[in-house]
Length: 141
Length: 145
Image (cartoon, rainbow over the protein chains, first blue to last red):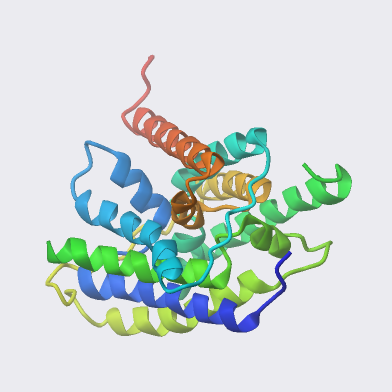
């Protein structure tokens, strides 16, 4: 597996912060991706254009990296059962709690929102428990 | 049109951050979540880097009323710490721990054309719609007396 690289991790993080600030600076919106994604899918929702454009920007990012001559490794996905259950839980849970790693973990914590601090602590905790159980109790999914 | 281009650019920069940081790779994310294994601190550096820009950026923007393109600044208004917040975050964490993908990296990874990424994003859409539907049913009052 790839090794820890603090430089690329920090540089990537700075860009994530920059994208977040750009979206608020330019059009006054928070970069909460679960909300942007869900509203972009909702035909009854007004203001879908900017949300679709943001998602297109996300998908274009690895193309830009590849165009610059870097290889982008294919994601190492688990089996279909985990993929399906995981996707359903991520979609359901983020909508119920009103945010994901971007909306609560970056945008919310940047505003020192107590609500987002609680949400981030909660999803970090349950995710760590699931990984601990699947890797160290069940021995890998 | 300007707003669309602005949103595309913001998404592109955000997505570049996800790719460069390695957060589009599920094993890197699971390596961070695996606190009892060979721990990978990458995600902490990524969120830390994001906050170095976003926290002062947001603090400066709080003083403004309109965006550069003339839109109102829409800050989230919710502040309740309640069961949907904690229960929803807990369920999200379970799904995140099962796969190692949250919504941003999942969408960026569509570019890989991996069937499993499309399956994950489809399941995510179904889960999100189900959650929104349940909320609408509940907030519009009980269906049965």
